[in-house]
Length: 390
Image 1 (cartoon, rainbow, N blue to C red):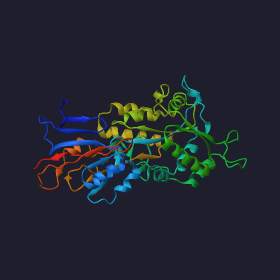
Image 2: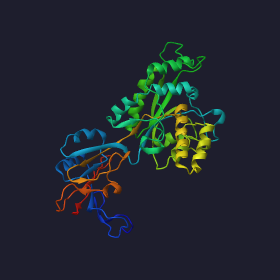
Image 3: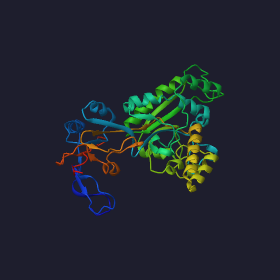
């Protein structure tokens, strides 16, 4: 392959391996490595044995439960943090106002979800740490906004989350007039015209979403809210979501791009009619800040605008963010030094990290290593094929 990067592809077998060697005309200082090999593995035990024996220098992308198998292996360290491409778990609450329903919409969400007290009660009754422990084996962090914690300066770390507090959730509902009038364990809206029974949907191809929905239903029942759970095919779920707004609550998730504007856009009023706005949320102050930040060239001023937008959306609660995913990568500590650590996101296989690697000793003999790429969330990499003396 021809380009201007630090390495060039010299051998490639799809589904097996890719070998790279330094590009001698690279315009920055060259890598200390003589080559890199990325190798694909189809099971974690083989990958684990490879790094344990020292034939592999770096493993990436394996599932969280597998992390325990790597703990305690001599000369192997784990780096845990936000992935290079973070995923955000989202629970969508339909707050669309029927009076402002888009032309293509139904806006048949449960009217109680347009009550801030109800939404915040649901947030207080969401046990995020339990969700992280049971779904992610502890490898995750509680979420607060659509901008994830791994987003560096754009993530508003000053927001105070709705603490898991069943008593507080019940008090919010009682104070707002949502009471169990007939003694069946489910609260009714003020006046008793409708019970707090919400349709709870998730994509049928997502087992993790099904588990999350079950945990939410279990906790929300403690505050007198019942759910009607339903797994729906992804295409059909998209159809009822937006701009139809023909749902109550949806368990979903989203990927994250490099600039926060894309994620911030989904909560603007201007995106209600085209299917981008998922919840029907509308706030004039939020809209005004979105327009301002899009053209603001001063970094600190734009950061403050984006932080304020996150604060507004968090307090208005059109979403509940159960968690941000974390990733784990394992690397050998006895072969190379210079791994890029503690940078907010974990991507030891990134060329910016690989370019810094040096041998830990002065043995000039070639060292065979590999970066293993697994399949279906079991990626493992074997970094640095051999190393020059320096």
